[in-house]
Length: 142
Image (cartoon, rainbow, N blue to C red):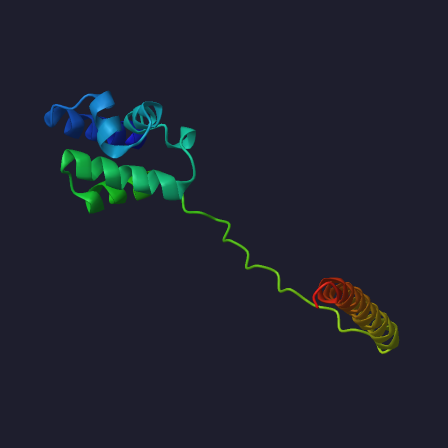
C-alpha cells in the first residue's frame, strides 16, 4: 500500500506541473520505463538503490517537490540493506626467496652483457662504414 501511495504522490506532483512521462524523461535523462516503475511503486524493478535515490532526486527537482520528503518516503519503502559491503582484500606480495636472488642476478648480468655487445657491434659497423666512405671521397681530390 505504501508503494502505491509513493507512486501516486510522484504522479500527482508530475501532473500538477503539467508534464508527461516523456517530458519528465527528457528533463531528467531517466528512461521512461524507469519513471513509470517509480510512479507504480515498483522499486524492485529499478536498478541499485543508489540509482533509485538519484532518480527520486532528479524527479523532485524536475517537478519542484521537496527532495528530502521524497527521499524520506522512499526510505520508508525500502528495507534497510542487511549486507554491508566487504572491504577489499589486502594485496600481499611474496618476498623473493634467497634462492631466487642469484638466478635473477645471473639473468640480469647476461642481459646487460648482451646489450653492451650489441652496442659495440653497431658502433664498429657504423665506424667502418664512415671510414670507408671518407676514404673513397677524399682520394679523388688532388
